[in-house]
Image (cartoon, rainbow, N blue to C red):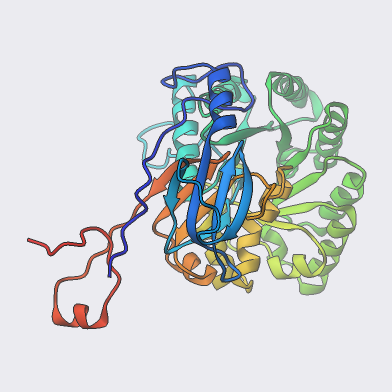
Amino acid sequence: MSDSPPQQPFHSPRSGHGEGDGPGPGHGGSPGHAASAEATTTLLLTGARLTDGRTVDVRLGGGRIQAVGTAGSLPAPALSRVDLTGYLLLPAPAEPHAHGDTALTADGEGPVSYAPDEVQRRATEAALLQLGHGATAVRSHVRIGDVHGLGPMEAVLQARRSLRGLTDLTTVAVPRLLTGLAGADGLAMLRDAVKMGACVIGGCPDLDPDPTGFLEAVLELAAEHGCPVDLHTDGDDPARLARLAAMSGGLRPGVTVGPCGGLSRLPLDVAARAADQLAAAGVRVICLPQGDCAALERRGLRTAPVRLLRASGVRVAAGSGALRDAGNPVGRGDPLEAAYLLASQGGLRPGEAYDSVGVAAREVMGLPEVRVEAGFPAELLAVRGDRLAGVLSLAYSRIVIHRGRVVARTSAVREYCDSAVAVALDLPRQGRTEPGP
């Protein structure tokens, strides 16, 4: 049985909308040209299966979903087409917790280089790897201060500009200290990072000598600039979590914390009380099922108690954390793997698990909701398979759509030997349909 990938040609966009001030290296053309191309490009996805079992055609245009109809009901012979027969069509996931400045450094010899060109290369490659997995938006935490100053932030912002039209990359400024004499420079640098273009204010209150003072400084600056807050915390100190919840309640556009693996090590009643406090304050949690990140300078042994948090009403998203750096030398940066782990080990149903990397992740990042319905943003992921559980189990072949255009494709090839058993069972194949040599 043939299982060949769709035959719609791939066209890499030359540029696109996004924050920044010009096209990136190797992308030729002008921002105006890309915006015009996006506005006029119309794409028809045919034969796609949805999670409710329907098989539909989907027309995209102007970066949005224009129409969804039963298979064959949207005739448009002049449109570009992608045949999604055999694929499950999903809202694209987003990556709410990445570290582009340290990604892909686990195998290097000697100290990690923070030269701007090296950081930009790593952040760009990491974002493209995550895009290939399906994440059309990435939030990257970037360390500032110490001997590197604002260099890593400027490098990741340059990566963001170079990726316009392919993926949406936003940055979180992560200072080390914000209190006392040593923290004065960190606070000044944090202000400069926001002026440069950092979209979110972050940091690790647990590592500051005065965690409460650190939090006060972050919340004050976030309120001043209207920025969201995204903090690293292990969550193993219930009193500290209670203070965080009490101080964060009134901030808009909101406060997010993670990875909170320490909550899983607390007594159940203590963890439940902390979860109730976070929920009452509207604080969101980003867990890291694939492993910890190096920002806390410790290695968490457990994922946050997702079911307990959800039962308390906390909005929980899942991120990837480390991508082959000191925090996780084999990290994949794959949101579908995060969902798989939540379904296989975290006690969530497949739909709930995918929600944590899709709807919830986009909500935490302040992005518009995506549904496979007319009028919603055309941020989509097609994965070979017919049901969500199977897709999370074997998510090999993927087609990624950002702003209505195919921007990444992964085609896995699986063939069985030409034996009588394989023929008799009609095992699925990919690749050649003609007999082999």
